[in-house]
Structures are given as structure tokens and as C-alpha cells.
Length: 131
Length: 337
Image 1 (tube, each protein chain N blue to C red):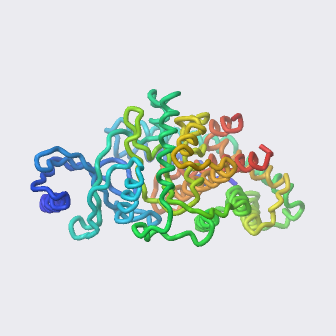
Image 2 (tube, rainbow over the protein chains, first blue to last red; image 1 turned 90 degrees about the horizontal axis):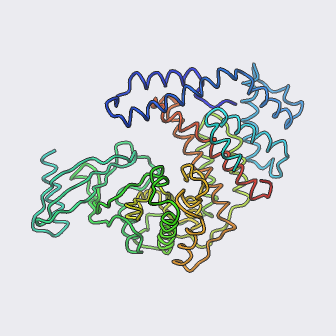
Image 3 (tube, rainbow over the protein chains, first blue to last red; image 1 turned 180 degrees about the vertical axis):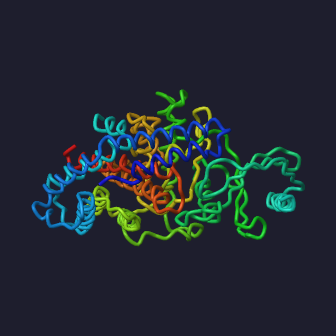
């Protein structure tokens, strides 16, 4: 499940901060805003390059956890189905259904977090997994 | 404003028991979404003094203490020997400035984590010396135990502090539109492993490098007492050491400035009690979850349409860093990492 904001919104925010920067005369603030804009645009570019590929992996991992039930899950497309399943999974974890977590759960959770970090902070992901 | 400034000068003069007081300069200081800080340069009976006046910002969050409570916390910490800006005067009456305020001594230095962790004076032995000092400071704070009449506004924990935290963070997650199975997993794990905390102490609850004012490598004051509460002392220890507060200096496990054992040494020498090394990793998972939830809340301020801000949106995306820390922390404790 891709974390919001999406690529279009990140691009809009980046353009807006560069265009409307109210602190343009302050070099420190200007440089901070520029860094944020670069970050937002790099995440947006990642999304556009990846397309729907990330969803395929997540759906596979959810299938590994839930089995064939997944085909009966509502949702008009993969993204909607993934959202429904994640909501269900979050609730089930809280009620204790996974107190002895199967490997497929840990694999799914790690893959979800890795996917979000590959998008938002690949440097952190690499350094943390290496450490 | 001139009228208010004159009235403030009169009030400060009386509070200080002085014959005369003149406000020479009054400047708003940076930082503080929750409160406003004003630098005050005054002549007190002709002698120069530098103070800070602290009051609520218009958009203060409701989870933090008001200034009256914060003044009491600062006084309690100061009396326990913790290095804080000396609390001087409290005005709880909103008549003068429109809201309560207090005045404390102004201390020199900077309190910015990303600067301190790169400060040449704090590399190697200098960093370890400061880490050890901070351990001793935290131990002094933790010598304050309930009940305390002066801190009666702090509720005593009805349940183990860990369970209280978990309930709070779950409620925050419930307010968000998107589910987060990774954080739910970490919270459930924390619930199953929750320590009892039979002897809660006064915890700062935001004791991290970025809240330590340091000047030339020396501590000048521990700041921002707004989240202080009765809790498990190891929660404070873990918040200081948590990976998310090392600003990339990950091998310096004590706040990105020194060795973890240096920090522990300071704590143990001052308190006469051992740091519970078995439970600190648990609280570091809690720290990661806490910061992740806060980051998501910040992001949601933008996403919900209330406050358009790229900074808030990017802060929300940072939650995954702490989610990874939490999952890996659990795996290490479980012997799988």
C-alpha cells in the first residue's frame, strides 16, 4: 500500500514551495525548502518509474498469508483489494490473532516497510539493513 | 505593546523584589510550535540580566502541560540538581499578557541534535564525557518519585505506563484513515511484553540530544519539560538512546554523541541503581513506535487538508524509518535479527 501523498501531489507541493517560498530572502530557509522540493520530486520520480510493480509484490505476500480467500476480497482493483486486506490485517493483529506470527506475516510486514523506505528514504533503508 | 511592556517591567521588578527594572530588549526566539519563547535583556537594579519568558503559542497542542505546570516541573528538577535554566518567576494570571507565562534564566549554547552530533568538541572523549554527564542528570531527575504535592497535577499511572502508552498510540492510529499493520504488530508485541513498572519516577519523556543545550561541549540546560510524567525510568533511558535520535551517528548509541556505556555509567554512578539492560531494548521499540506515530500525525495534518505543507507531508513519510527500527528491534530481542 503506497503511502500518501502520491506523485502528483508531491510534484505540486514541490513546485508550490519553490514558487511561493515566503522566506526566499533567508538563505538558510531557501536552502531547506530546496532540499525538501528535491526530496519530493525524487519520490515522485520513483513512483512514476515503478508504476504498479510494487502492488504486485504486496498482493503476492498478502496471498501467501491469506491464501485463496484473497480472490473473494472486495475492491475494484489490486490497490483497493490491498487496502481492504491491510485494514483487516491491522485489526486482526490487534486482537491477538497473530500472537505467534507465521513467517509469512513477518515477511509481509518487512516487505511493506522496505517498499515504503525504498521510496521515501533508500539511504536509510540501506544503512539500517547493513548495520 | 508599549503599555504591556511597561506593565511587564513593573511586574518583573516586584517579582524579583528589586527597586528598579528596565527591559532593554525583548526578542522572539526561534523554535517552539507549542510555546513561544522571548529573550529578555533587563537591567535589574542597574545590573544586566538575560532571561527567557515562555508562554503558550496560539496553536499549542493539548497533550502538553501548560506553563504553570511546566514551571513546577522545572522547579522540581532544579531542586533535584538537574541542570536546567533556573526558573525565576511565574505569572499564572492571564490578565497581564493574555496568557500565563514564566521567566527563567537564559542559558548559552545550542540545542540542535543534528548540530551537536557533528560538533568537533563532542567527537570521541568529549562526546563520552557529555553522555556520562547526561546519564547523571537523568538519574537526578529520576530521584523524584510520587507522591509529590507540588506535582499533584501529574496523574499517577492507573495501569503500567507501557500499557498506557500503547492505548494512547492505538487511539492515534485509529484517528488515521490508512491502516498500519507494521505498527499494529509492534504495539501488540509491546503489549504482550509490557513491564509492570512497580516504581514509576519523574520522567522527562523527551530527553534527547535536541533538547540538551550545550555550549562549547558542556551542558548548560535540559529543555522542554512539557511532556514530563510519572513513568518507567528505562523509558527515558531508551528514548535518549533510540536509533531515531542519533541523527545518523548510529554507532554512538547515546544520543548520537557518545557510547551507550558512558551514558549508563553516569546514570548508575549517580543513582546507585543499575540500568536494566534487558528492558531498555523493549523501550527502544516503544520509542520507535512513538516517533512513528507522531510522524504520521504530522503527515496527516497535511493529508487531511487542514494545513497544506510539504514539510508535514515529508515528516509523515519518515514514519517508515521508525517502523523498520521497531521491526528490527523486535527481531533482535526475539533472537531472530
